[in-house]
Structures are given as C-alpha cells and as structure tokens.
Image (tube, rainbow, N blue to C red; front, side, top):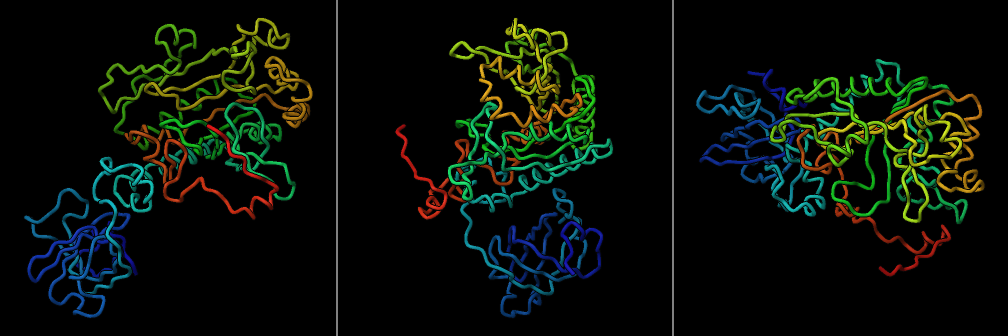
Length: 467
C-alpha cells in the first residue's frame, strides 16, 4: 500500500512503498541518490548495488528528472552529518530494494525546483500543469483550500446554507459586459454568464432561506487589466432581517478569525477595524481604498478599514445618472424620501460598505432594496424606460411584491484576499489555471475559432470588426 512521503517520519525501520516524481538525482560510484517528490514532500532514496537488481525498468541509472517511479524500501535514519534540516523528512531516507519506472518524462521547458518568478509568465501558463509542480504553487493551492474550508466551516456553524446558483442566466445591465452564450434550441437568443449571483441571492432571501453563502464563480468581459481575470471567485453572502451593522460585524469577525487561523504570522494593525466615510477617505487620502498601514515596509502588517456612506449615483458622460456600486442597493434610510421622489439625486447616500486591506478593496456589499417601488426608482433615476425595466428586471420586481424580507449582503474577492494573505504578487499565483492579463489561456489556446458547423447550428455568422 502506498505511503505518502511525509509519513515516513513515523515509519522508521519499516518497509514502505512510495510513488512520486524524480526531483533530483546524484550518483556517487556504486550509490545513487534520488530526491523523490510527491505532494506531501521530498525524501532522499538511496540505491545500492542490489536496488532493482538490474531488472528491466528497475535500473536507477536510467532515471531522469520528473520520471514517475515506484520505490519500495526500508526507512532508516540518516547519519547526523547527513541530516537535511531544510525539509521535514530530512532526518530519514529510504534504502531502496525495488524500483519501477511508472512513466518517463521529456526534458521540461523550465525547472520546477525554483520559485518560478524568474521564468517568463507566458511560458509558465502554457505549461501550467508543469508549473503547478513547483512547491510554491502547491503550497498556494493548499493555502487557498484552507481559506475556503475555514470560511465554509465558520459560516456553517452560524446557520448559513451554501447554495449553488446558475451559471447560465439572463443578460442584464449591471456594469461590466456580459459573456454571452448562444442558445441552440432558441436560435437568436442568448444566455449570459453571471457577473455575480446578485439577483439569485436576493431571490433566495425572498424564498425564506435567510442565510446564504456561496464560493461563487463570476464572469466579466472587461478590457485587459493586469491583476484581473475574466473569470474569478467570490465569497458571496446574503442575510435576511439584517442591518448594515450586522453585516459589518459578522464579516469583520470572520476576517479576524480567518487571519488568525490560516495566516498566524500576519498582524492586524487595529481591531475593531477603523471606519471612514467616503467623503473623509477622499478628502484625507484621495482614494476610497486607503492604505492605513503605519509601517508600509512591514509585509506581515494588515491594515483593514471599512468605507461607508458612498454616493448612490454619479454623473455619466452624457449628463445622466448611473449607480456607483450596485443598482440593487438601498439608500440610507434618511435618504429614502429623496430617493423615491427622485430629487437631490447627487446627495443621496447608499448603504454600501466596502472592506479595504492595505489599500486594496477586498469586499463590498450593501443593504438591498426589498420593496419593488424602491428598486424600480433606482432604474428610473438612471433613465431606464418602463418597458426596459420590465424586460430586464420584471422578475425581480414581481418577486419583491410577494413578501420580501429586508436583507443585505457582501461579496469578497477571494482570489485577491488569498494572494495578499499568501504574500503573492498577483492573483494568478493562487489560481490553478489562470488567464493572462488580456484574457488568454496559452495552455488551451483559448479563445479560439470554432468550426463553421457549430456556428451554423447556432444560426451565427462571424463579422470581422475593425480595430
């Protein structure tokens, strides 16, 4: 039965069977030394004259880097002078008695025994399945797993239900461009991939779920930007019968507990998190994402803050109004009369709240409009005609007419939070298969043209656009 490399520290004197990759090899006369790697770690394997017996596929002299092998041998302590203090298994080695080459490997396009920062990123992404073999990236994925597991357990203990929402939905004007998916069954019609589960999570509140969360995939067809991805992951959350203070308290406590549990080497500068109004943040720092760290050279210092009291609307280029954050947000209670009357629009403040860490927004949410007439007023202020409102959001207006509870929520940018806590320079380092900054996948070669027969089935023709 296979034993993971990390487990050999409990197997001294026992015979074990290991599987993994040849991480390094060293030949010393009649002895050959192999560093064998699996996901759990690295161990030194010693091949003496009897190892493999020279049988076909069992000769250690033919081994090359990244060959996949099976080794059977006895675990023993290394001589004190030969202990490797840099790895957890460094006091032990395996005296090989059997060797089997499971699969061979071509020479790799780059080494996987370094951190990898020095390697061209396009090349790394083209061979991402090899890039992921490096220890740093494995640890990053393990760290991300622990973050997500902690969040799930934390919210489960507080009565939240994790519920999946559809990835094929309707295109609605929510900000960024939608990714469209043509329907073969209904030619000329399209699904959209969700920019967020915003409407679905509100409909779950109408349904009486009361406490929802999801580790949600989101899709936005945005122009190329360095630290953005066309598909990304959110922690999405919604609560019924909750006010702004309830959501802020829950999320602040979750963030504190998360940092303490998965990144204990990090230090939170100030608890409770400071709160700034949008106006004060802009006046004092010139941004609504202020970096409040007192020592910006301290890489383990985390300075959180909440920014509140955002303007609900801002002027568009053509002189109209658009939302600053979310059209489904409710105004602050003292601004509801102006909101419904559509007056003093520039002075209306929303219930939006953003959580910022070290100068980067890591989450944002709001209390929602749970009354149909209030949601409709938001779109009317933005100049939407009655017909357009009904066509795009009629299902929401109808749902809110059936006894909708007051509710609010938040979404965290999970990729960004994980990269910051892991100390990585960008979100691509903590995503298993990321795209380039301009939305390409060098490994799969996407986006790519499709066969004309596929377009014909969908009733589509490609029109070249001059750029």
